[in-house]
Image (cartoon, rainbow, N blue to C red; front, side):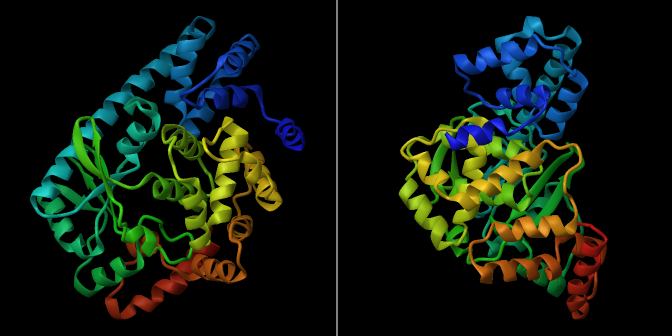
Length: 390
């Protein structure tokens, strides 16, 4: 009963409530009734459209309102939502087609490439390419293949976000996780990754980088390499946490992915998260999906999650900050939240040092230093942090 009380303490505007009720692909009769009841009230539609755009939830909002109560929504609002939905669907189709072309090209050149997030996640989690917003393509390759991959992409009119050469590029690859490209012919953004997990948390990420069970799945009648579902869920949780849940859509990704993968091995997943020292991150994300989107986890007792009082309190704090107009965006508050996500003091200290001194792509892009001046990236990172360039 305590959990239900906490849900009631989640005081949000009725427009936010409507958005969250629509932010899922599966709704039951009870949720339909709540949506219809809210629609009968006076709504600040401009606020709702703004918030759905901010959190990348407009396609889902249109999808559910159109199915449940389109006649009760102002015509201009439905027209706006429909226009956005169709334009997003068209853009996503363009990205999917380009992804297949790139993957075919890489395969012909002997490059192992694993697409994830972007259109692949839209299909895997939502079952509909049009229901997810994304702005780029994400492809994982093995680090050793990056120099060849870069040259291949340049030959196909993909321009690197900045050009590094020789020793400078080698140091960048060693310290970063991705290299961004853009094709100005079709305005498609592409991110090449050689590390799935990013730089937000320290840890031994070889588990992700050397996947022994990379699967070949058929997506839209095409065989593609994909990440096993348990590992993919951990990657989604690390991604949302690394960005401190700036978008509710990242929680939706987790909710929809779990709903679409009913046969995940939860014992293996929890053990893996524990071994990687990110179990608190996993549980916090699951609790957010349970509280906000009514996630039901097949084959796992949610009471086991709610027995973790620290994670429950942490998720409650995060949840109440999600929809605030003025959020706690200062360096200190962000650092404190990051540290709370780690179970062990050693990880907290290492994460704090990474946050303070580990150069990001921003430092490399803004200040292209000669390789012998590479150590200067560390104080540059600290200076940018103090300027709140987070």
